[in-house]
Image (cartoon, rainbow, N blue to C red; front, side, top):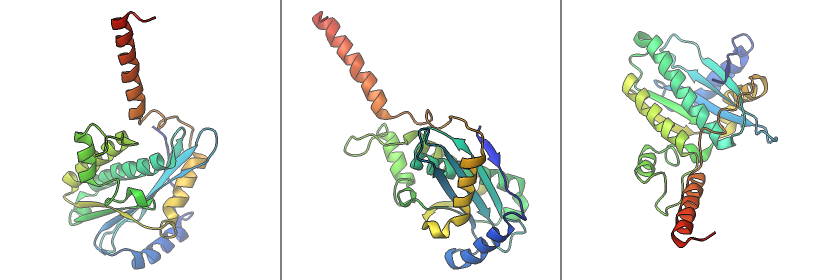
Amino acid sequence: MAQRIERKPPELEIEVRFLMLHNTKVMMNPHAVYVNCDGAMDYDTMNTGGIGFIISFPDSVALKPIPISIGRYIGGNIEIYELEALIQAMKETLKVFEENHEILKNINQIIFITDRYGLREEDKTSAYKIRSWRSNKWRNHEGKPIKNHKLLDELDKTRKKLSEKTYARISIEYRPRKQNKIADKLSKKGKSEGLILDKLSKKDRKLEDENLMELKSSILYLRKRTNYR
């Protein structure tokens, strides 16, 4: 597992206050739990990255916001880190709900925020699209392979488990980066202060590699059939 870094107040106290005040304008559902997520990456030779998220509760719940940084990862790309942030945030949110069942039992919606437009639920993280790609062996309607399909598969299964355990509707919504500042800072902290661990470079093997192996097998088969050397 990558190293987890949790910053506690007072270091984050001012930033969290700002987030809560700012989110009164951004959050549309005052009764939902909001989880702002982000991934950060250095464009170096190892593509060093980190993830961060903060779980915020409505005023009716007597729980303080939970900020978490996780890192460092290497070998990924920015979409991989953004997906990993959503997945780890969902897992942590499930843990929080299990540990605070009585306090959170009336929450009926959990909204995950990403500042990557393509990962909103109307796009690449759509449950309908993911299940369609899964049934089509992770290819789209044109037969092209879906990138980062293993992470999308894990996200969909984690989202389903979270919904079943909490009885809440789970959604993934887009916000611009200026409305996701705390998660951005937490992901950068994970990137810069965590222990290096190559986790994501092998987590999502590309379908192109699988296709190449199939092609090589076919060539060997044909060579045997034609006695070609």
